[in-house]
Length: 213
Image (cartoon, rainbow, N blue to C red):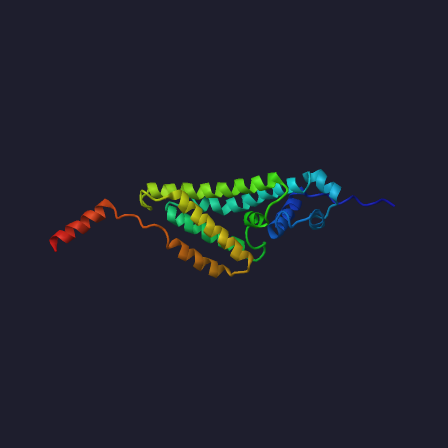
């Protein structure tokens, strides 16, 4: 009797399954057994394909960033920097609270898991989170240069604020808070946007009108 050919291993699909698992359970909460069962391979095959749990997580992290980048980068490049921040936060809230994918954020799940024995994983998560802060900071710097923020705005602190809002949204999404409620929170957060001073032309018009009164 001729045996059938073994099922071909699809590394891309396996990586996508790993992303979903790490996203839902975090790095420390996901065991090798969880991974082999989700992917449908034995441990030797997992090691042969990805090099182990740590290496697989790092690859999954890259894949997750690709998903985020598909909407994050375009959102933060809108003509209005303020609109960019708001659009980004709203897209993030929808992405993290929509059925069909794990709720919340893989990056935040990793941060909430506590200390990990893997220094590489800890450093990778920190690096990605800091790159997110920098993306927001650059957008806010553009806002300041365009006059959407007062000249003396502390954009480093403001960037941290909006990143903190985004991380809070992730935690709330994980807890099952509906998308529409997350959007209400974003509306309140955007109300904290520092008011820019009136333009020179508007000040002149106001002063002229005041002089005629």
